[in-house]
Amino acid sequence: MDKLIELASTLVSGAFIAILAAWLTNRSRNRQEQQNEIGALRVHADAMTVVVVELQGAAAANRLLWEGPSERARTFLLTVLAFAGGAARARIAGGTDAQSGLVGFGRAAELLSRERVASKQSVATLREPLTRAATAAAPLMRCSDPAVVTATEQLLNALGDVEDSVRLEAALGAFGQTINAATAPRPSWWARRRAVRTG
Image 1 (spheres, rainbow, N blue to C red):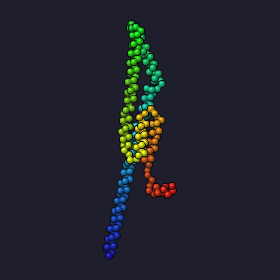
Image 2: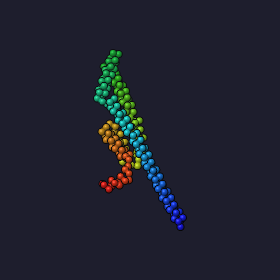
Image 3: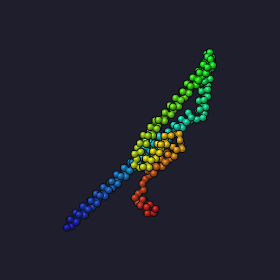
Image 4: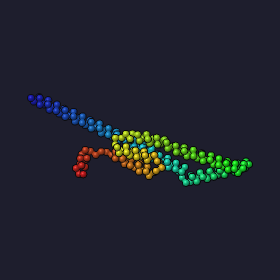
């Protein structure tokens, strides 16, 4: 009888240890998976933030180079000078007033055409960062946290109009807060239970 009791207690303690070991293993695996997901989320969020800042810089450079009042005045002045130079050259070559005017307009149109091509090439440089933004956003859109998905969608929508810097800054700030909330360490079971009791 004693042997039977000893055998039963050994089986019960062995089963208890096996259950406890399985529970601890699963808990450890779940915690590790959660940490891996948080790490991956941080990496993707950082990539998205870098691309957004790069886009803001490219848009600011584009505004500075092509759209500022001084640049518009410079383009206007160069156009007037190209017109006057072309007209004077045609006049010196013996052209009539009409021919001189046409040559002047041709020179002005040529200059404006070059300026327009250069401006379009500058805007085209935004295509690559926009593509990287979409690539960085893809894993964030598949996140299990709906707040992260929503914040990413809002940030992508704001990137559609890079010139609206206020909206883009607000979307980037909301995105950062959402990522911080999603990657913050979860309080322990005891801390959550204490918070429920006190709250």
